[in-house]
Length: 244
Image (cartoon, rainbow, N blue to C red; front, side):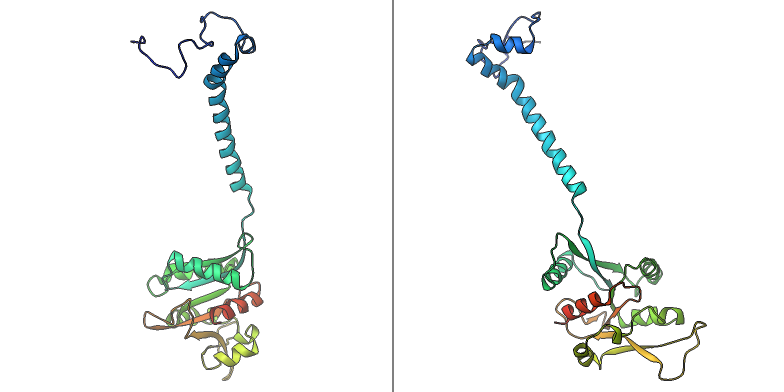
C-alpha cells in the first residue's frame, strides 16, 4: 500500500510520533512531551474517546429516562364504534378534555378506543366489547343507534351493559336530554321481561357536539356509560365536556 503521500491530522513534527518499539507508558509519554506535543497527543488520542464516551453516556441516560419515566395514568376511557377519528381529532379531544379538567397531561391521559366496528365487523366488535368489559376498560361509549340496539338486543347484554342515566346525569343534564333518551327493558336472570313500565334509559341520542358527528352512516349516534366503569363521576365529566 502506498503510504508516502498519506496525510494525517497532525504535523510531520508531531511529538507523539515515536518508534513502535517504545516501551513507554501513556503517562510517561505525556510527561515527556512539550506543550505542543501534549496538545497533539490529546487531540489524537483522548478527545475521540471522551466524545465517544459522552455520546454513549447521553444515549444511555436518554434510554433510562424513557424506560423509568412514569407513564400517565388513565383518567377515563372513551370508546367510539363505527366512527372514523383521525389522529389529530383524537389528540384534540384528549388535550381539550385534560385542559377542561385542569389535569396534568404528564400524569393523566384519556384512553380512546376507535377500532370497534359493529356495522361492518360485528364478530370482532362483540369480542372487543366482551374483553374490555370483562377487564373494566370501558367507561363512556359512543356508537350508532343500530349498533347500540345490536348490543342490547339480548337480555344478558341489555341488563347491566349500560348504566341507567339517572345514576350519573346531573339534574341539569337530565332536563336537557330528557327527550333524547334511549330505553331498554329490564329482564330477570332467565331473560324474561318484567312487567310493562320497567324499561330504563341507558343512552342519549347525540345531536350537537363539536367533537363527534351526530349522523354517521346516516344513523343517529348514541352515547352511554358502561356498566363496568369504576367511576361514574368521571363519566359525568366526560359527557358534560362533550356537550358543553
